[in-house]
Amino acid sequence: MAKYGEGDKRWIVEERPDGTNVHNWHWSETDCLEYSRSLLTSLLSNIPLLSSPSLSLTSTSVDRVDGEAYVNIRKGKIIPGYEISLSLSWKGSALDSDGNVILSVDGKVDIPYISDENAGEDPDVRITVNDEGEVGRRCREAMSREGKRVILDKVMVYVESMAKGGPVKDEVEVNRTKKKEAPVAAAAASVGDGRTAKKDEEKGRVKHGRKTIKLSEKFSCRAKDLWEIMMDENRWKGSNVELQEGKLIVQKWRFGSWPDGFVSTVKLVFEELEPGVTMVRLTHTDIPEEDRYGNATVAENTERGWRDLIFNKIRAVFGFGI
Image 1 (spheres, helix red, strand yellow):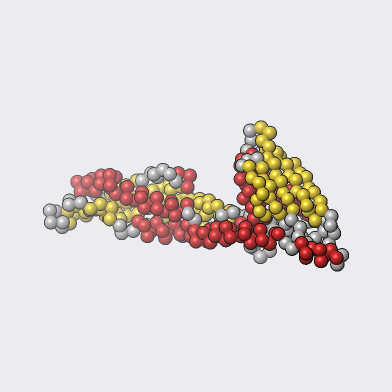
Image 2: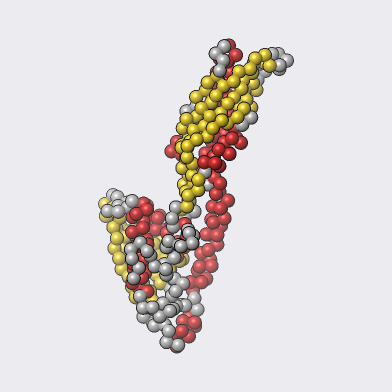
């Protein structure tokens, strides 16, 4: 019997010795700080911020991008996280009637806090200039009035890029395509071949017995939230038979170690006992008495998998313990 936390090799959800993140059960995290530096430098270096008959403003370079940035991916969902600051240099020039430069000044733009928590808001922008004369004053006012907006629009491009997965965007799109194709293949495989099961039976390797598991588990969360998580965790194991949002999941399940022709039924009923407290009642029927190798612990292993690898893991990952 596997110890708690070790899992069972017949369950697909497990810690893989090869490091494979099976079905993204665990968080997949990618450091995006260098990606952020590269993208923001590309977006904000040497771009025109204002061009008028009497004044021009241009960003010259991104001097630094500090902080942290990452993208978490779990079950195909993108969860970006970043808290960065940046500083860039700019140049302003006063022009004569022929467009010739009369006087130029240099300045800095500091954005001390760009965060995923405030993705829909404009961050604070601090503008300074190294010349407090008339030209410096005009350039700083123009930066505050016109140049700032250009810079914030470029920052928004970065924010939107992170929301789409940043450097792992292509990987996410590929996985989503595979996920859409997988249920068709899984459904075909799960049907099995009744004749093969009969042949196994005739050879004495398979028993007819079928077992049922019934469990009741309590979670500290809303029923709808738990239902959505369970749909995330379970949709790859089988095909949906009946779904009622926040109330019911019925699916057809089978495992690779089961004899051919055996397909079980999973029924999960969600009941919100009170706001923030949900009871899940599991009924798992038609579990084979033995697997294809003659092991008679299929029901016990399946029950342990439900408790340790699904229910307890959801409590640990999402903090839903009572």
